[in-house]
Length: 342
Ligand SMILES: NC(=O)c1ccc[n+]([C@@H]2O[C@H](COP(=O)([O-])OP(=O)(O)OC[C@H]3O[C@@H](n4cnc5c(N)ncnc54)[C@H](O)[C@@H]3O)[C@@H](O)[C@H]2O)c1
Ligand SMILES: [Zn+2]
Image (cartoon, rainbow, N blue to C red; front, side, top):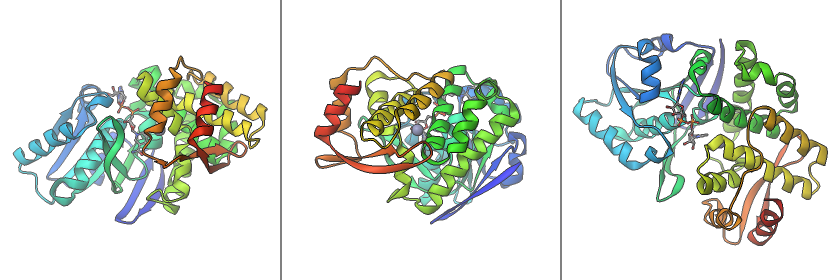
């Protein structure tokens, strides 16, 4: 097992890579623990849950909203959960985002921790202290920065994941390698097959290296006032693609990284050959790189991006594989590029 620490402004978070769901009881109190999970995760893993109350939520991006949060508050009140309650989110990014938001707001905040059960949530969603829900058609519009006490990454949970969900997790690993670690990128290129088979040694290294990149960025800029923006590589386009096509987050980010790479190459920050390596790696990991897109709708979604400021938007571009920069781009240039690239 390997440990990493995030030092948040409101508390620290320990990420335990290679720890087991069965041992979660070592990290929680003996009483007043409430698990938040979804039906799929409960079906496969409730036998390994610690003995405590379980609140089950639905699945899919559409339930990541304030209605679901309100339903959970209601159940916590029914259970007479008090200030010393401890919430454990066991599930994918949706469960973790919601459990963290509930944990941070119920009774002005109670203790909470996560056991992420998808590859995407192990390498990304559960790490970094962003908790929140969608609102009014906008993704992650309402939320808080607050670190979970622990994040337990149990590789064995990944075995029941559908293939498509595994690939989505790899999209975020490629993102971390592309913005911060050229060696990790090469390792991924060389260990693709084993990675897709979830070979325990390979997957543990990939999750660890990925979390090293994310946690070191978050340790320098928890509240996304500077360097943390680099983690949005592929996401400005990705969110617009996700919204207009409804494809899963990781697939949209994969296609979004391709647009951002093409733009980086166009601005001569990235060699054409490097952009090709990124596309080839995503394809090997069974991710889409080009999707059928309605350019007008994508542009409309970009115009409504919550990170847009006036007539321009900050975009993450690559200065070579392993190195990212944030550059301002005018909406007019962005529209021209999208029309050309997509
Ligand atoms: N907070 C952050 O910093 C952050 C970062 C990245 C993504 N996110 C959010 O994460 C969400 C996506 O997370 P996700 O990709 O984990 O999706 P998800 O939570 O919807 O999980 C995907 C599917 O897999 C199922 N599942 C989960 N674990 C399983 C397992 N071990 N075996 C079998 N099935 C399992 C779930 O029930 C669900 O149907 C998005 O809402 C995104 O915005 C947040
Ligand atoms: Zn993402």
